[in-house]
Length: 87
Image 1 (cartoon, one colour):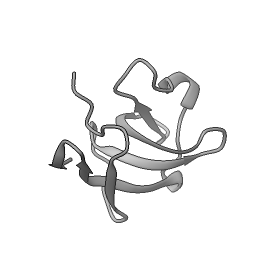
Image 2 (cartoon, helix red, strand yellow; image 1 turned 45 degrees about the horizontal axis):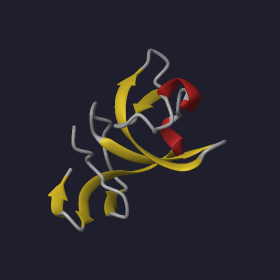
Image 3 (spheres, one colour; image 1 turned 90 degrees about the vertical axis):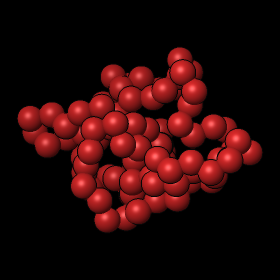
Image 4 (cartoon, one colour; image 1 turned 180 degrees about the vertical axis):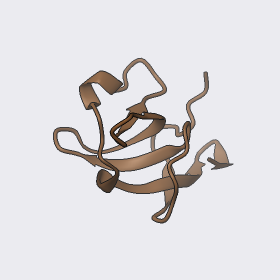
């Protein structure tokens, strides 16, 4: 599977968003710092769970539940050496 966001890409964010499964978000994590991941699901508490796209990615279990207030923005455009891609 090709990664949505290749290494050394520029990613553009929208600060106003709704939470959509499989969309990509940038968020602050207390241990890992700023992370960009794909939304897997929203649990019954309203917390968000994220997943990575490759085997070297931090697992959703290690990340744990993320509060909506930790989300910085939703990724909508990626520019890399492979070209421009809408997310």
